[in-house]
Length: 85
Image (cartoon, rainbow, N blue to C red; front, side, top):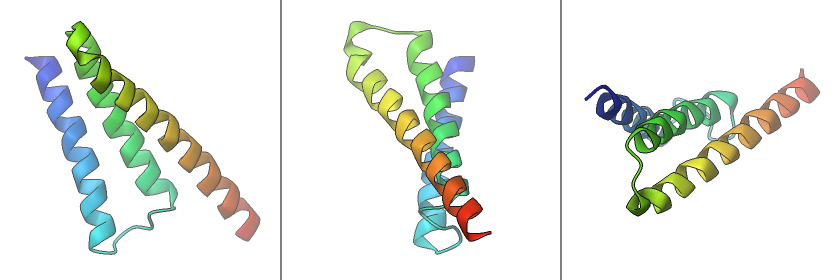
């Protein structure tokens, strides 16, 4: 039950991040968006991995890629901020 809640929280974090972009509250290239996606992805990955079944392999792969891309985005956004600041 707890892992299901973690997965739901992760999904909500990703959805909220997307909504914040649509309503123009955060920059899609900024640290906040990338970090929210990364945290949401980690929550979803934990939820999937906790009760892993071979049928979950696709979801597991998507979340690993999602997290990797989010980390890259955070690093890139921070470098861009350091260059501008």
